Length: 508
Image (cartoon, rainbow, N blue to C red):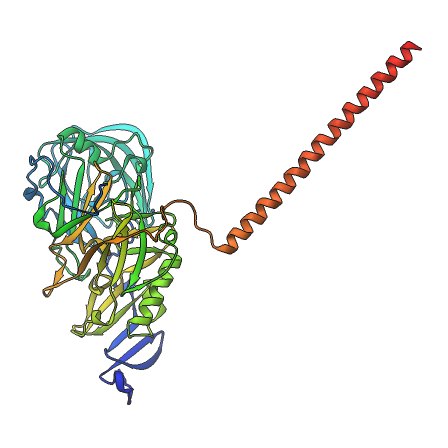
């Protein structure tokens, strides 16, 4: 491609090319950047946007509460990456049929393909399982992206690298779907690990992990390590993508201390976000902005998803501090890829992103931070000459979602027994000797609202409009009341007068 003939002093080294449509514009910046030349939907094989919306110290260590579960048997039992999801192998039915099941902390149904689909290689044949029993109940689940429908039943499950023994579980046999199974994924079902309140068709359908805890007696806690950070989603081979530890936390999978934040409500794993920083710059938004209408931790969502106002503020802050001012808007929107000459990685030109979570000591907070390697994500290379990346953050209309973009930097503990979610540095979130995540605290939360997740945020104009509407409604109700009361009084007055006249007439 053509290059500019001159450059300003601070940015003389290499040439930046912005490709939008058929027009090439040239700017001098420290990298050769080809932004917007490729559509991410064309090149990204399968972005999994959503397979879907305390003590006195902030610091404590996770441990195996009983010492009876061999967590090492569960290490590296996940495959996949954030683009295609993290999944584990299970044997379902009698005799066992091997299927790969997506691990999802943002839903509560265990569901498997039970009919052919063009994007999957095999499915669970209920007829071939002597232990499958249909309940005769229909079930359907709609996610942020995709949906499926089918029938509820029960069957036996064995997890080769999980808790020992056979477990009888509720299972949804997927008979039809739309946008749920995706090209280039290697899983045939979904393991919803959230609470009964999210189960469909209602909370009487016991979720998978509840059944595991009840039948095996393991502690009501599980933990996740997701090791796809920095891996291209177009890689042909699926690496051992991480670990799902059922019954506790495995100390070899994290470094340093475990920091806990309370679970605000038991449906999703809802937490409370106090603030966000880009670099070291606080966005200075009302903390309720971050929690509209909820903030959750969800392994089944690929990206860090932010409420629209928060997303816009983050993009603006990144743009101002990234040294690369002229990105195509499609890159931020997730429809375009940014491509650099091979080997010219862009991460040093982008800031860190930090999320402050309320600690179990509610007057304190702690900070989880991801480096650009986690949110400027490699997708593919083009002809061995370009490395292409996508933006690992997106806007959301239904709440803040701490998805795989963030979770890949941390070992995350879902301590349901004590209603808290723990974060520690993941032992696999390292690239070239550089840690891709940070964690720090405690920080004072004294200047933050007592409950950032409570109530609905309104800006001042909306408050004025709300009060005006309330006043109008009160006036209308008062007028209606007067219209109802006055005729009644007139009728009663008339009746008395008539009766008095009648009495007087009779006396006469």
